[in-house]
Image 1 (spheres, rainbow, N blue to C red):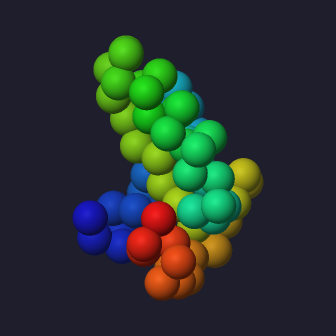
Image 2 (tube, rainbow, N blue to C red; image 1 turned 180 degrees about the vertical axis):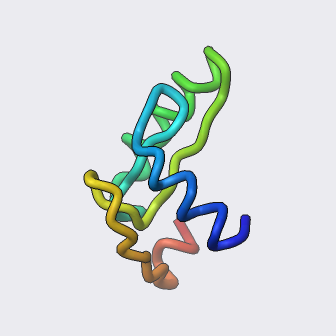
Length: 67
């Protein structure tokens, strides 16, 4: 996904098909959201975005990659 597309998605705000997660530390919660989305119409969970749509980014360390 291109950065411009990401900005456009984030600008639309959260919805039934779009969820923002601040960090990968919320992977378990995000997995539940993905399961719910898969039972409906699908969607996106985007990490590195704050609750108000601010683009924060996300550093992914070796431990996260291994997990």
